[in-house]
Length: 429
Ligand SMILES: Cc1cc2nc3c(=O)[nH]c(=O)nc-3n(C[C@H](O)[C@H](O)[C@H](O)COP(=O)(O)OP(=O)(O)OC[C@H]3O[C@@H](n4cnc5c(N)ncnc54)[C@H](O)[C@@H]3O)c2cc1C
Image 1 (cartoon, helix red, strand yellow):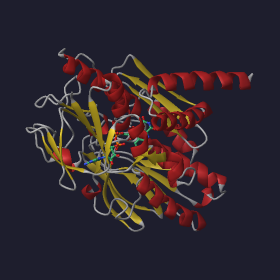
Image 2 (image 1 turned 180 degrees about the vertical axis):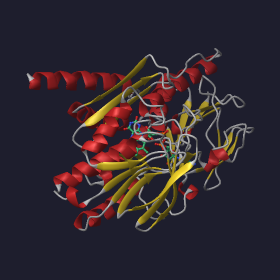
Image 3 (image 1 turned 120 degrees about the vertical axis):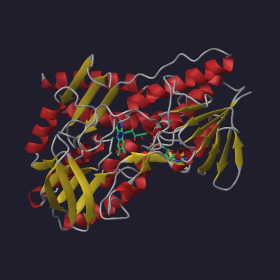
Image 4 (image 1 turned 60 degrees about the vertical axis):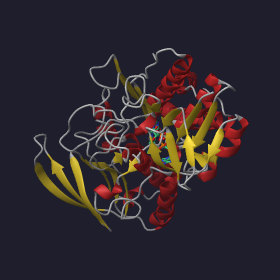
């Protein structure tokens, strides 16, 4: 019997637990270690921040769902990883032995890299449910006494989609409240141009997103290094393509949401350079295994992937749900093959498929492969994307609650897009 331990139970870790248990069956033990007792659907956070969703809609307790699937659950943080001993030490000192480890710990949010950044400072975040709820508290006060909004992403950020989403979602919410005219909005991003997305752009993402920002009266600053956040003011150095500062800005804000840079979490980064890269992301080979400790697999936002290209202000490449799903698939089969004595042969597909909600409409991106030049670079805007995103949320949460082993992100998206497009064609006729 092998013992497979998964650290983290979110978009990557929870499907991994279900799928690994299903593929290995009763003879092997699967344990999930999570520093939160509940599953949170992270992509809903922008909606939580404006009050379109709440905690109850987007989260559920992990223990009963995992128990039903005969998966062990430990609701506390993994504190120390001892890869040479195949052991994890938990926050309460308990030691857990493993045969295979799957690290799905997501990012550490590096607010400390910019003075005053983050919910402990002077800007909001939507990266966690707690942060989104805190943002919502302030949002309720803000709409009663509106002022300027700043939204965007800090240097070294890699997850730009939610910043665009949140800008358009706030815009929609303010228009519905008929107070949009009282709110100057500025999008500040470390991307070299609007629509870069950490991917070198996808199709005409630059043209489309610039046009959308213009149509929604949202100004922007690109190549922007946010240097300091103060109450009411965000300080920005704007760079040119040669990496020189060309302008310094002090942008007024009454409400702001800036996505931070991501790093690896402490439990993995403290192991050192054999396990992680300089920013603490887990090094994996083409089979999702760590090159030194081949019984350690990793998936999701916590893995190391190189930036798509160098940019004047540092940016990273995003790891989105579809990619994560394909990493889960690879990890599951490679662990199974290893147990059976075969060489691993499953590789994740490095394709990005993303649905970006824009409040009442949305934009869908497909980048295959993620790094250009690509076989497919496609981007389309439409109300059907907003509907597809709502369906995606409903479907993913439902599957995770039921403990289905296969979240089928890809199949879901293709189905949802097919159905919704078909419906809108019928409606439009
Ligand atoms: C606001 C936002 C919206 C997004 N929207 C989309 C979207 O619409 N579509 C898309 O494709 N992608 C989206 N993404 C990107 C990505 O899909 C998500 O970030 C996704 O949640 C990443 O999953 P993960 O499991 O790798 O990491 P996480 O979701 O961060 O999960 C990691 C888990 O590990 C736990 N953990 C960390 N350290 C420990 C420890 N020491 N011990 C035990 N547990 C630990 C954490 O508490 C967490 O529950 C979005 C990202 C953000 C931030």
